[in-house]
Image 1 (cartoon, rainbow, N blue to C red):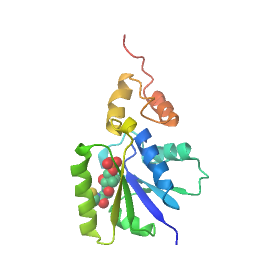
Image 2 (cartoon, protein in one colour; image 1 turned 45 degrees about the horizontal axis):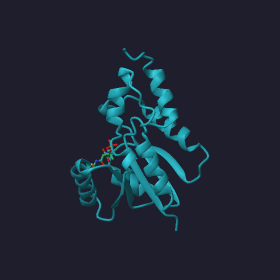
Image 3 (cartoon, helix red, strand yellow; image 1 turned 135 degrees about the vertical axis):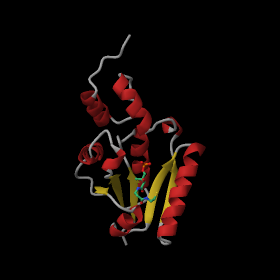
Length: 165
Ligand code: PNS
């Protein structure tokens, strides 16, 4: 039986932290479904299609071990639709724990069969977050160590600002 894991998130935008978690998940599963949350109410910086495109460009359109989907509605329902019961999330620090534990417990309450697996972020990525990237990039700060090159290019196109001296 194919071992499938769903890695859900906003991916607004994809960071090096996400890339590392996806790569490490791929080592343990036959397929990883990168599930991009389509929630316009969250007012994302990048559209759902753009966020999917950036993940696809990073991992290659023809990587048969990765499926890139968008979803709306309950995550547990989407996970079942993918033919699995496994959610993967990355944990950076203790500060992530409350939110992640709450989500994992709620998802289990909604569907007892669902399991959330956590991977510890690499130390080098422990400070990296999409939220910080979105704060720094519009101000002309260098985010090249936080995001993959495809995302850095997309951010430069979106914010072609010169850093103030
Ligand atoms: O990258 P994020 O924003 O931390 O990801 C959060 C995400 C998308 C995993 C979470 O918001 C989610 O699962 N949303 C779907 C709605 C849902 O199922 N909510 C109940 C569980 S919190």
